[in-house]
Length: 80
Image (cartoon, rainbow, N blue to C red; front, side, top):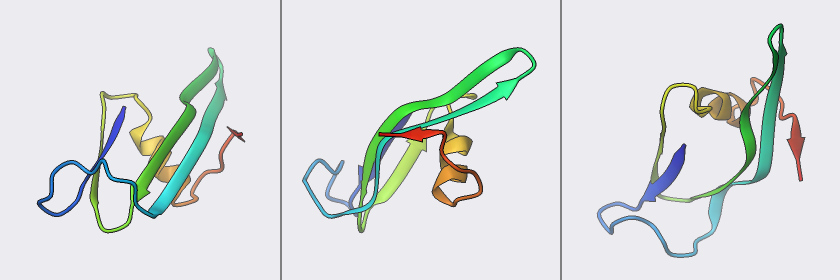
């Protein structure tokens, strides 16, 4: 899974800015009949203010799980 910001025609955002959202080593896991599933393991990211941010990855990479954590539909399993 990759998180990348774009700042309105100025290219990919690599400059240090005030983060609108900052995640530091967030993890989420579930217990299933088959065992423990960990779609997110120690995810860290900073999403700068005023950028268009794209979250992309293959099916099952944890994109929807991350959005559910961000909008607080689910709680995190662990954070450092």
